Image (cartoon, rainbow, N blue to C red):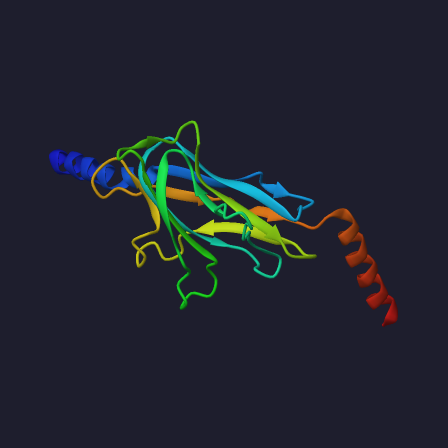
Length: 188
């Protein structure tokens, strides 16, 4: 009986241990306030894991910001030094996703994430007044093989915490929005 308990505990420990992995994905800088006409953010992954590849979705309000179409042909999406990747257009059946991003370690192997690694750099154009969170996620990780963080080991994926960033207008725009709101309230 004790032997069965020991074996079951060891087996459970092996099954649960991959789920205890942790990667945190953030936007650097976390706040872009006030937003200039064109701005650049790094998407950074940090954790105590060695990662071979990653994939996630990016969400933002396309009426407030969009990927910057540089007149000199510079890319709006640049992968970090440790990664090579592909940009895939969003799934037309999933209207929430603005970008699908994925990267593989380059050269092939595992990248130590403990010091943080720039996964991708995005260049945006600010379109007008308004706020927008810039969020990341893998809402369809089981159905979309391009989502998640592959870590060292056979079929191991890290659990990932995604931290949203924020883009907001310049103070004078906020002031105008506030005055417009007050005028609407006063009118009632």
